[in-house]
Amino acid sequence: MDSRFTTEFDALVEKFAELLTGDASEEMTEKIKVWSIYNHIHKTMPALASHWNQNHPEARAQIRALYEEVRDLNQKLREANKKTEE
Image (cartoon, rainbow, N blue to C red; front, side, top):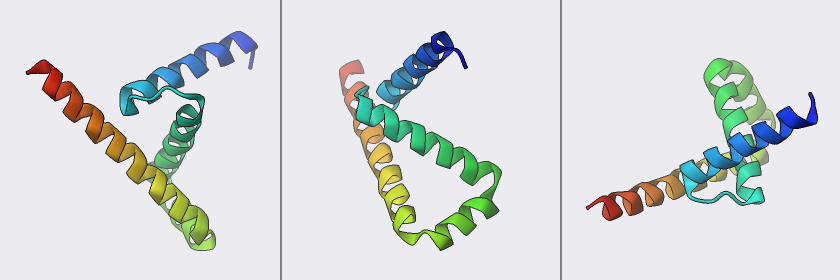
C-alpha cells in the first residue's frame, strides 16, 4: 500500500475512534483497530473466533476488557452529547 493511502486510512480510523469514544489518541486509535478487526472476525467467522478464544483465554479476557472499555466510553459520550442537545 502506498503511504498516501496509509495516511488517509489512519486518519479515518482516528476519526472513527474519536466519534466512537471521544478519544482520538494514538493509544485509543490502536485499541479501536484491534476492536474493529476482532469484531469483524467474530461476526463473519464465529468458529474461528471461538477457537482462538479457547486457545488463548488470557487474550480473550483482554479482548473482553477492550469491548467493555469501548462500550463504556461510547455510552458516556452519548450521554454527554444528549445533555448538550437539551
